[in-house]
Length: 440
Image (cartoon, rainbow, N blue to C red; front, side):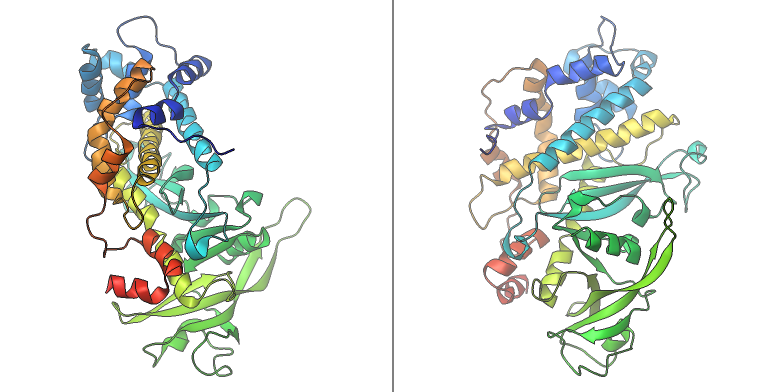
C-alpha cells in the first residue's frame, strides 16, 4: 500500500522531522542543553531549519533568528558555545535521516526514462573556508576550500548522497558504486570522466550518460545503425575527428576506452580495453557537435534522447544555485572544523527539505504546468518561518497555507520555456519534434 501523502506543508514538516525523534537523538548524541532559556527545538529551528542570509549563513543572523522566535537574546558566547561537536553530530543525523527517506520514496521516471528505476545526477561544488583550515581542506585557487560532492535525483532535486572533502579530491573517486545502482541511470559531470568508473557502473547493471572530454582519445571500433555516413571509414579514427567537415546529422559509434582495475587483496591490478557508445549531436546554438559517452544501447535511447537525458543533469546545478543563493551553502568564515561541517550539512538539509516540499506541491498542479525551482526557493524561504511554528509546537493544526497556494506562487509563468525535466517527459510523450518546436 502506498504511503499517505501529507495533506499540508505543516504535516509534511512534522512527518519529515519529528520533534520527539530530534529530542531523542539529541540526548543519544550528547547534545542535551541544560534547563535554561536556550531550548533545544528553537535552537535547532534557528540554526538548522531557518535560512538566515542571502548567501552565507552568519552565526550572528542565527542568534537574531533565535531571538525572534523565542523573545530571548542569549549572549554571543553562550550561543556560540552550543555549536559544539555534539551539535554537529545531531545535524549529521538529521541530514542522513532525511536523505534515507528520499531513498525510500523513489518516484517512477516518466516518458522514455520509465524503464529505469531512478535517474541520478552527480556533481560537486566548492565552498570557500578560512585560510587557517588549509591543513584539513586544501584548496586549488585559494589556500583552503571544501568540495561538496552530491548525488541528486534529477527529476525532483532531492539529495541522495553527499561527501565533504578537500577541493583537491577528484570527483570520480568519491562515491562507491554498489548493487543499489542496478537499473539506475547516472548523469555524470565531466569530473566523473573515468573509464574505470563507467565499467563498474556497467558491470553492476547500471547505466550512465556523460560528456566526452577532449582529452579522451577514444578510437572507433564499430558503427551503430543510427550513424549518418560511411560505415567503414570511421573505423580506427578518433570519435571527435568524425565531426570534421560535418554540420549536421548524428554520429553514433562504439569506441574503445582504457579501464584500470586497482589491486584488491590477493587480486592483481590490470588494464584492459572496454567498449562504450559515443554519440555526437549537432547543437544549433553553438554550431558544433556535442559528444556523449553512454552504455545505453541504441534499442533503448536514440542519439537525441541521449542528449535530452543528459540535460537533466542541470537539475543538480539548480540544486547548487538554490543552496548557495538562498539556503546558506556559501563562504563560511568560522575557523572551527566542526562548525564548518555542521553549517554545510545544515545548508544541504534546508535545500533537500525544500526540494522534497516542491515535489509535494507540484502534485497539485494540472498537467502541463510545473514549478520553477528557483522561484520555489524564494517562496519556501518566505513561508518556512510560519510553517515551522507548528513544527515547534509539535501539533497538527489547520493552517491557511496549502500546497496548492504555494505551488501557484512558484509556477513557471511560461509554458514555452521548458525545463530539462519537462522536456525529457514531453520528448517521449508527444515526440521529439514537438519539444524542438516548443523550444524554438
